[in-house]
Length: 192
Image 1 (tube, one colour):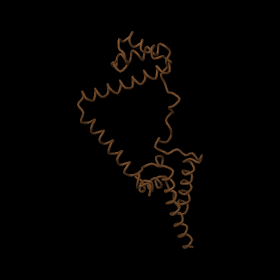
Image 2 (cartoon, helix red, strand yellow; image 1 turned 135 degrees about the vertical axis):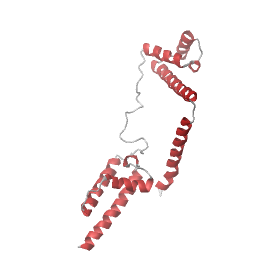
Image 3 (tube, helix red, strand yellow; image 1 turned 90 degrees about the vertical axis):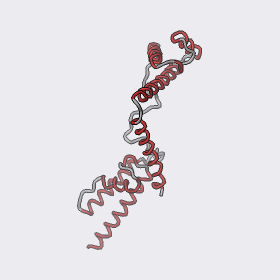
Image 4 (tube, helix red, strand yellow; image 1 turned 30 degrees about the horizontal axis):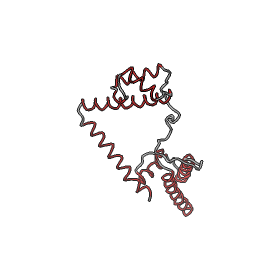
């Protein structure tokens, strides 16, 4: 069963996150501040390199900017304040920081969902689950909430939400709902 094989990976990710949280808790304020400064520095360095590329600066032009303005040979030698000044200088040259063509707005579902090349995306599976829930509810004479399908998914994979499920996991939920519907149909047929 594929879902059982995916569980250790998910548990490993949870352990890694827990260890990261504990590491943050065990840091001194100075260590935490130093880590934040280093992250800001890396971010600024990335902006500098992106700006250099987008402005189309030749390597010798970029080198002369660093030497004339900051008296360094490489941007790696700059501190956070100098990097801020360099980014501001690139902005004065006409560079506009922003989202590039490679980034997208936040999607409805997380990025962990596998891409579907068939053109029959998750909507098809979600519609099937909705129809099966309606049929089961009609036979039982009550409303069947989406949490029923979410509970099936949680028992099978450990995932809480249908939005996080892959197509294969949604198909497994559909097969369980199909079996439940078949059982109810047989019960109704034998009762009459």
